[in-house]
Image (cartoon, rainbow, N blue to C red; front, side, top):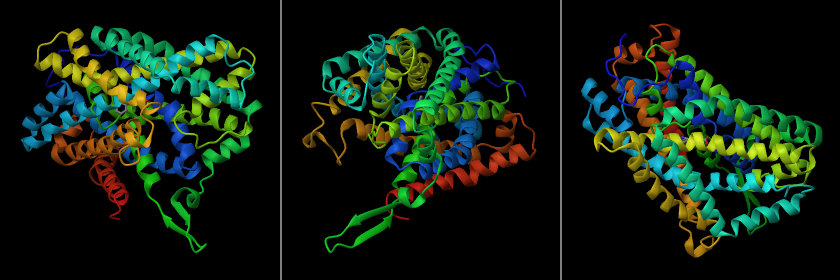
Length: 471
Ligand code: TRP
């Protein structure tokens, strides 16, 4: 089937480049920073099982839906939704889906840049040899010093945001294609080196058991000691919501990032095959990160539930002890910054593409118009770890950073993903989705349509209802 539209922003030079760009977007802080720390906070194996189920039953079909919508519309998500609403004669309210995505991406970018700033700071700490002979105590002092200094966190946050705006201003394709081809494989190689090190020097058996032995009671039973001395336990669905939200976050789904990349995808490439490759790479990166980190956590008596600082308080111990650790450590944080960079770019591309299409802006002012306010919002996240960490600055018991993270990952992304699934499964005609997926009417297409119509939406709704206590 020929394309019905063309993209004014150009196309990826091949289908392989689309996959690389999407992997660049998916693999980022979510895999290496967030996955280990939320797995640690949520008790390990059973959480990982739920996360993997969400990836397979919700992530895969919704990623296919997002790419197919993007490629059919060939514009920024906002205009793509306009075009498809017209094609399908759907209710005009569906157009809001594009806007929801832009807002979500903007909010995520604001704190993503702050955490990427930590990784930037660690490039120089590793390079200066500060990890040599590190132990649990010294790494936590080192990390604490960063958190206690709003000035330096702000400086790193600023540098990262400028880096992101610079690439987006020049056009995503020219910068991204080259960076991703070399750096993504290097990051994987280094993760493997770290896992081998954990195998040799860490408590690998315990780390692997923590990740892969599901103990559902430990994760889902919340027990309290009552005043009478009796222990009262109840089921808590919170980890379900966090695992679901993370499936969206790590695959860059639910806000139009993959949609906008899909709109630059060559017409003849297979969406299903691309999706499976992207998902496999993303999941492998997360599991490798977990296998590198938890053995070190247990061998050094660290706390798996240490929170957002987890990787910054474990990996330096490994780099401090391994031969060549200064070089490996520096390289690792450099690659982590690149992984975060290629993800952050995809967070503002939908908004920038829209400004270029509808406001006739050049890319440079468009990138500034999105990046600058996201930077301002990020200051709230910088302060959440120091000046605003106190209770008087908390809302619902959460700091600004926690709140923005919770709202975006656990509510806005699954909501956006739910709407994308409903649009692709119920609003778009069979002919439209089948034509765009180019997979005929076989088992593959039928399975996808069944998942995206019934399974993914219901699972999201059930987890939502459970989280607000209605189920
Ligand atoms: N997936 C990226 C990560 O794991 C983050 C990211 C990039 C993202 N683009 C996104 C998350 C769009 C949600 C939506 O680090």
